[in-house]
Every structure is written in structure tokens, then in C-alpha cells.
Length: 70
Image (cartoon, rainbow, N blue to C red; front, side, top):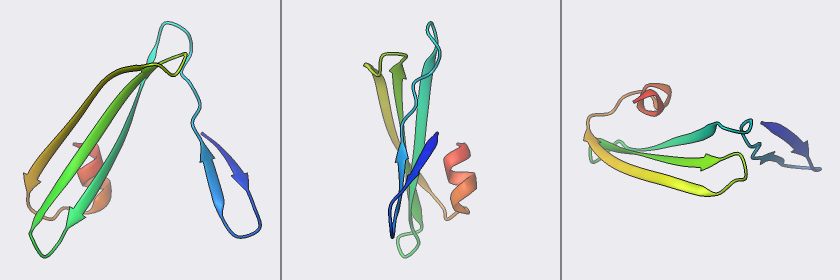
């Protein structure tokens, strides 16, 4: 992923995978008071076209890097 810097913020620019590959972007959201977290995954091809997405909820409060690893 390339980073472009402005005066006060960093902007991340999505980079496509090589041809004949797909890229899976993953993120997680943690809700400590509710003791649960959600993850989302999004697949795109080398042209950036949508292939498939998935969201899922779990119980517990793992560290963010562990939640994204699921």
C-alpha cells in the first residue's frame, strides 16, 4: 500500500493485486462495553472490481491485531 502525505494527515491508496490474483482487505471494530467485536472482509480483483464481502460478529474483546487476524 502506498502512502501519500498531506500537511496533517496520511492518506492510504489501495493498490491492486497482480493480474490473476485477488486481494482481501480486512478490518475489525471492537466494542469493549458490549464485550464483542465485528470483522469485515472485502475481495477485489486486479481491476478493483468487487468479488465478495463478508461480515461477522464475535463475543469477546481481543486486541485489535488478533481480531483482524480472524
